[in-house]
Image (tube, rainbow, N blue to C red; front, side, top):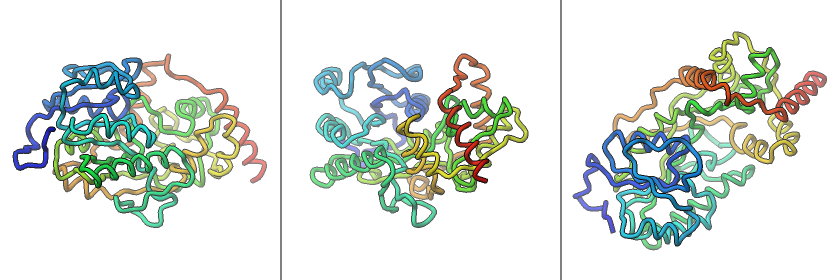
Length: 346
């Protein structure tokens, strides 16, 4: 077994890293940074979709749910750290404990900041904030995964580290309720619905910023058995988030219509079974995070990409890829219906 617990563990040295997934918004940025820093990066995925693999990374193809296939492609390999971006249920977590026990010095599980208590009793949110989300099954499943992994750490030293990101984006992700459809509505002079009264605070983090902290904790023995929040320190009210997207899209004064989150959730079940739980279980609540713990582990970490710059990057990218400017007509109809209702009720 690779040992990161002895004094020989030099966190500045190149690491042998395995990324499970590696082609999502967060994982692709982390893999790219790891390669740039000179780490040896192996990416294990099905090879079916996602972002391009960075030059210099080795790619192995297998379905992580197929235990025999994974065992075959990883035969004889050991890693300083395994970064797991694609485990979502406790059964999957238990399978990975068995799969990677004795094969890695650190197993980093990407959980979610939506696992923290909703609504939070206090801000800022710390790693010690209770994990409890009665609104969203996704979050409860991630909490259950953490329970499995920390249980394995306590019982037989399985070397888990848990990371909890919040809203992390890159140029491909429009972080509005309707995604690109809301940009389309702004540009065509149509009103856009905003959940709540638009004043709740939201933390947004660019994937490149997240990657700086995330790669910095890989291979650090003091991180084993610990959990870390990784976000930026920038938090904005939702009205301002919509306003920044509007300005990036060339719209000076978007028409924002405020609608209660509970109302949107109640009327969106037929459109999307995930929109309501994700709204009530995350976006509807103010979230401000204390990043002191990750900053103490990774000296010099700070998020430097302002969301105003991020929105311009997103809109510019979509404008250069008009084929991806997909308008969701069901969301258009939902927006029109709820905005009419809100105006008649007002």
